[in-house]
Image (cartoon, rainbow, N blue to C red; front, side):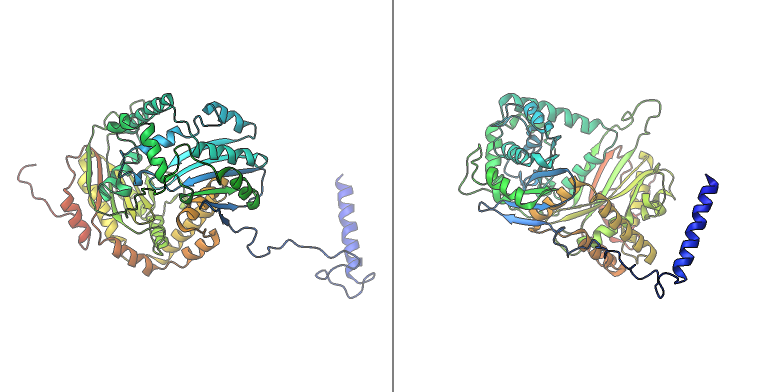
Length: 511
């Protein structure tokens, strides 16, 4: 076999020499097309037409947005401008209830099982998620089942039965979820709830996202219908789809969503809460025994968790991109994370905090942004005896954000943000959510390459400018655990107003 292979190679070399010497084709080079061979047709991108998000508005105000994507499966859903921020005139928790009641019995389907069996015929799954400002009903299924999917979505959103037994079951689920929230080892959801309550005290995004225990028994069908009548109107909705033809989606929407009368009837004047988020700053504390949170062979030690946040901007403003880069630059994570630069090991909260202070278990930056405000927070956890020192380390990091960012540090944060954006947008459900949320809030969609250009244009002076503006706001503080050593709110505020971020010195007569 080896001899045959060598002889073939020798034959090939001989043929090439004969060919290139010009014995058969004189004056020919390998870079020019060969005679007698058809001209190749190369694939080309004809502008951006096939990749842009197409948007159509129906006569009733419903917007339809779609993005075509190659594949047999599609993700289609309805996004509604509804969530816990709109519950000022209602007992908090209605959006939480609606999330748990989603895809239950409807006018067309007798139970949740019937809905799931219908979807299974098309290899489909369904889900509903509620955030502070958006409620999202989504289905992923085969493209061939699009008609069934849109019909089912219309029924689930506009024709739910909300039976007494379903509402009672939901009350049990909500109670269990609230118990679980207080018992789970990861305190991040609870701290996020507390920091919003501190930052926007009693208004819009500061209203509870989870139903308070006292409100569980107050919510009934009549109240749910009253809320749905005001907020589930076509002009507050977007039907978004990924992986389907736009015309096909519009046709299904006209068939199932144009002249449908919702089960709660229509109201001539919708009583919609249009309050703008009022940032107040403040502190929310929860004294809690964290010593038995995680028992077992390797228990998590008792920790105190602190989250400090400052007001940023809305996602509609130009400064949103510099804030996103700043959040990436701060990065952080748990003290047990492993990995290289891609895992954020070169972010500031790793280099300046976790690498230097071995007793800190966690230091992570978060950025929450809404259509009228935003919040940049740092979450840190440590032993209860070192809370004061931990708070000072975090306040110092906030002050140092206003210093000049190094060129390599900034480029790394920008590259990391772009790579995270592009990797997330590989997933069809993420594209669906991106399309739906952008069209719901702005009426159009910025494509990934536009966002990458905006990220590339962020400079060190942009970071300095937005940080200086952010540091003028009052801090929002959430504290959970043993708070004996927690500095007063006034001291935290003084530290964030100082040049070096240090807490005012405290002199004690007795220790």
